[in-house]
Length: 71
Image (cartoon, rainbow, N blue to C red; front, side, top):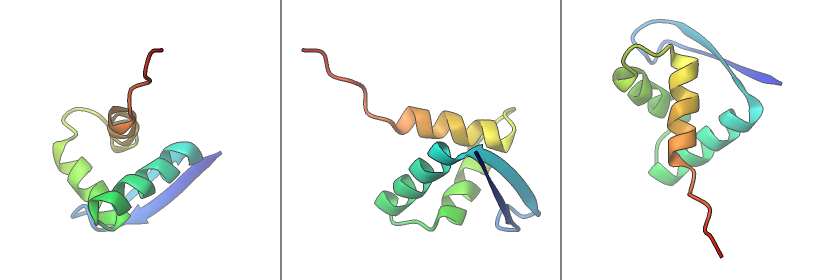
């Protein structure tokens, strides 16, 4: 399932679709950082380089996940 989001927070109107699991993790990360989800998306948009915004969000979320520990 994809989550759509529209905002002009990124200095232009954007529409993104990411799977629900990514959207939920993005909201969790934003909350831990003390940011509104829209502000975190704006920050990701500014550092995304050549990635499209949906891909950049996925990369950001995966990079924020804790590494599994080995027993």
